[in-house]
Image 1 (cartoon, one colour):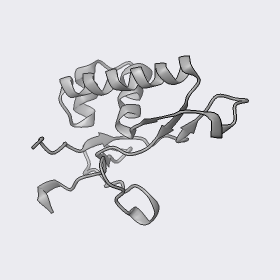
Image 2 (cartoon, rainbow, N blue to C red):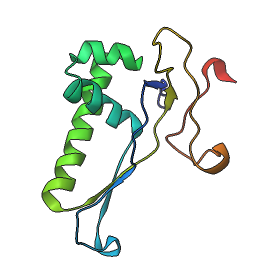
Image 3 (cartoon, rainbow, N blue to C red):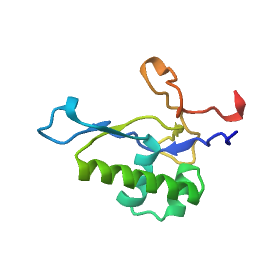
Length: 129
């Protein structure tokens, strides 16, 4: 049985959760799903220019885990750009950190309408509750 995933701390939720090539009907496009933690890893390392160790600390994960998340995200984004696929951003085992202070307790983020869990890849509670 695999180990349970740690919650990945996310400081910002994306402003948009869907991107597609212009001029191509959505019904004809293949779709790639990026998790919210993959977008956060991209934001911290590629946009803010943090080293992987610093970004991993902010996300409450190991540097090696951050490296795997980045590798996965880069492959998905490259596939979408090169092959003209749509990108959907959703899911992930995350907790939303207070944007004003990284030292404060994180706020839980629920997915889907009414905060319903939608299967695999959802947030987990600490302490086994």
